[in-house]
Amino acid sequence: MSTENLPQSPEQPSRKPRVAVVFGGRSSEHGISVVTAGAVLKAIDRTKYDVLPIGITQDGRWALTADEPERMAITERRTPTVDQLAESSEGGVVLPVDPANREVVYTEPGSVPKALGEVDVVFPVLHGPYGEDGTLQGLLELSGVPYVGAGVLASAVGQDKEYMKRVFTSFGLKVGPYVVIRPREWQQDQAAARKKIIDFAGEHGWPLFVKPARAGSSIGITKVDGLEGLDEAIAEAQHHDPKILVEAAVHGREIECGVLEFEDGPRASVPAEIPPPSEHAYYDFEAKYIDSTPGIVPAPLTPEETAEVRRLAVDAFDAASCEGLVRADFFLTEDGEFVINEINTMPGFTPISMYPQMWQATGIGYAELVDRLVQAALRRSTGLR
Image 1 (cartoon, rainbow, N blue to C red):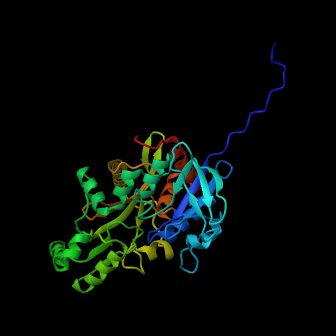
Image 2 (cartoon, rainbow, N blue to C red):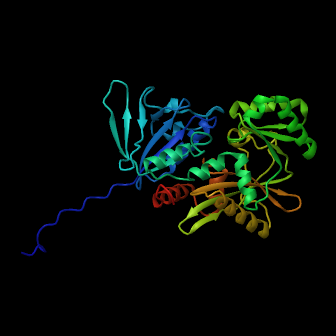
Image 3 (cartoon, rainbow, N blue to C red):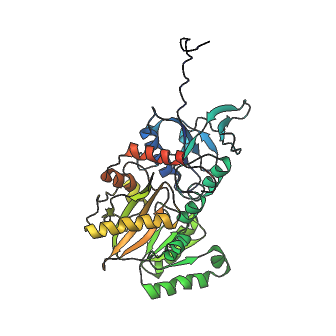
């Protein structure tokens, strides 16, 4: 019997991919991560994706949060927190650890666990330790959930400025002079560790920049012009990380370049220049996020300089085995040489941040940028690749 003329069952519409936007975290960059999440939640195409916002509090609790991007902005020079957005002060979100099960569960004391549905991809807009450093990426690998951005190794390399510089040097990228003080050195002999820094200053001159080795957003960094400010700078850096990095000043223009993963590989954006902020000693957290010191996009470089910094940015992306996105920061010295300062595997991602601005000037707007990152993550499997 022919079935040609029988009524056909309507096809079930395919489910939209579900994106969990994970933000906040335990690092000192918690607040700016919340701001970034607000921008991503506002921009992501709701006709194309279902969205689940998950905030991580500063004490490490995974919280179900309100999907209200307007509450995730800097107000009165203060950044928001996940605790302000959490739907409960006790409830927690649990990711699966079984790769065969991507269903997220919400639990609250005294209540039956509630299934929130499957997650197809995670967009981790966390900055700093416990989010950008490979720890969250390792959890997602174990769970078998694809995610936006760099994998475990690249995230760890991108977070630890010492090993980042070692990797870049091994691939022929030029870095500035630096010295590292590890926790054991400081604990065993503070005088010897301090002398190590002073000898470094004697070789390379003042000022020095004393930094937490594994933090970002210019948090915990002090520009030190002489011996009198050194101990205070060390204490400030160690407040954020027991391992500190001390860098000699590299005299030159600050140039940044974005890298984005396309179907055929990574490409670089037009570069930007960060002019010296008029009210700050350098481009610190306040200048970046509170006072919003504007960058110059595109950077006023020669065509040859532009081509060179774009090439170097992609080289840095490849050297660290990055995926998804990177912002690469350089100094252009007076003799025309580019010195790489660092990469950020999850750079500041608010609409006023330099990474989206550079891609906007290259022809890819914020919403398209978010979409491309999600699509790149969906194309990629977890595990060895």
